[in-house]
Length: 146
Image 1 (cartoon, rainbow, N blue to C red):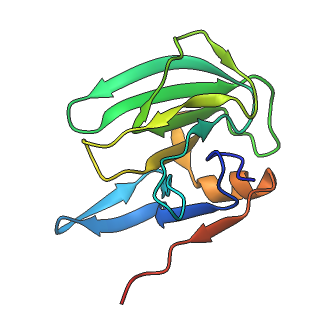
Image 2: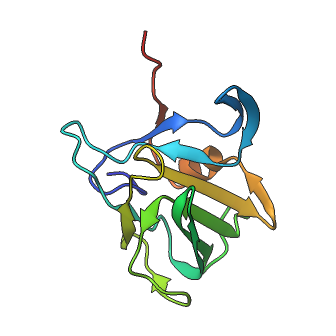
C-alpha cells in the first residue's frame, strides 16, 4: 500500500525533481509529480504520509489548490514542511491529519491530473524521494513512451 496515494502499491513519479524543459523553457521543478489514478483510471485520494498540521491553504488561477503542512514530530531526514498541489481538501488551517488519513482528492482542470508533492527544509525545497524511501515507500519513475 502506498503511503501517499490511497490504494496504489507504488508511488509512480511522472515528472521528477530538478531542472526540466517545459513549453520550451528550462525551469526548476521543486517537487515531484505523482500518478494518482489506478490501472482503470480511477482517481485515488491523497493520504497523509505522517501526522501533519495544516498551516496554509492556497489557490492559484493557474495551478489550482494547495495544502501546506508541517510534521507534528521530527522526522529522520529533517523535513519540516510539505506542499501538496492540485488537491481539493476539506481541511482547514490548524487541522491535524493523522498518518494514513485523507488529505483530499486530486483535481484536474488546471493541469493534467497528478499530485505535485514538495518536501522542505526551512525555506528550501529538497528532493522528496529520499524522504519517501526512508518511510518505506516503493518509488518508481514512469517509463517514457516510445
